[in-house]
Image (tube, rainbow, N blue to C red; front, side, top):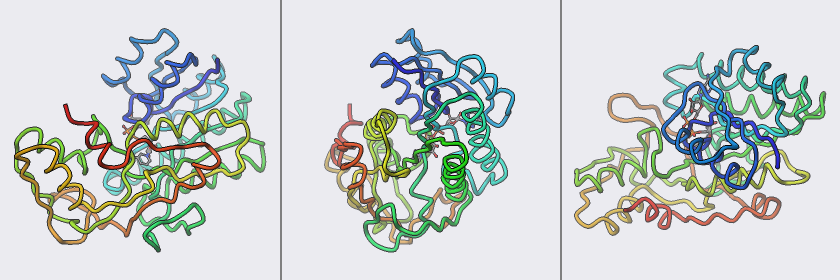
Length: 311
Ligand SMILES: NC(=O)c1ccc[n+]([C@@H]2O[C@H](COP(=O)([O-])OP(=O)(O)OC[C@H]3O[C@@H](n4cnc5c(N)ncnc54)[C@H](O)[C@@H]3O)[C@@H](O)[C@H]2O)c1
């Protein structure tokens, strides 16, 4: 039984990872700035989950957490998430995503925690140069979100070099599933279809991206936490397949009789008509490395993932 500190534990991914670790008997310290209904439910189910409310940007708070009960491993998911949030609040994005990560790395160094598994992002790549990319693709992010995640990747390498820490980055792409806490496809299609509400996605009919069902991300997280020795420090985590928004809308239309969904042809933008930001070219992630090294086997292609939402 290991002791795992999960940051961002109240979040969409964090709460699911807390649940998976607690279910198999790990002792979990679930750290977040607030408690969500999802985390409260998991904490109610398992005695081996301890909730700690705190602000990751406050160094003394993070130090106290490690001083009291140093974890064997950190699963780090706390962040300001997404391009839109980061463009709206670039300073806060860097405070939480970068300064918060440094606080953790410093605490790990001082209190002897060797491994962090960090939720990085495909946004660190910037524009995809081809329809499918692997981990060696250049990393040229354009927006504060991707830049902040790439900064953490580089910081992790420095801590490895100087202090022997092992900081592993999961470059996940467009994670979805029930209760995604932001407005985005495919949730916006499913929500509208189930509510019987017509929905027009104004841009992105031909926009191709990989979409990762949340359970698959949880599997990748647990595999990365457990791997005895990592030959790489970064892994793509996706379904391994690109699909256009029009194809997704059509699939939802087949699955929910009477769904009224349409997608406009303009280039895809993050956000909605009230505030949006250009999206770079995306595509599919080549997940061969995660498959071969971690034993990652995504269970959900987009059709299975969409079906998993439906009542
Ligand atoms: N959801 C995706 O599509 C996706 C894709 C790639 C990578 N990621 C990464 O995965 C991680 C989890 O994403 P998510 O979708 O669960 O997002 P989320 O917003 O649901 O979770 C982030 C959590 O971080 C917490 N947090 C934010 N600021 C904090 C602070 N100052 N102190 C303590 N906690 C704070 C939030 O309260 C929230 O619970 C993030 O690091 C994100 O960048 C997500």
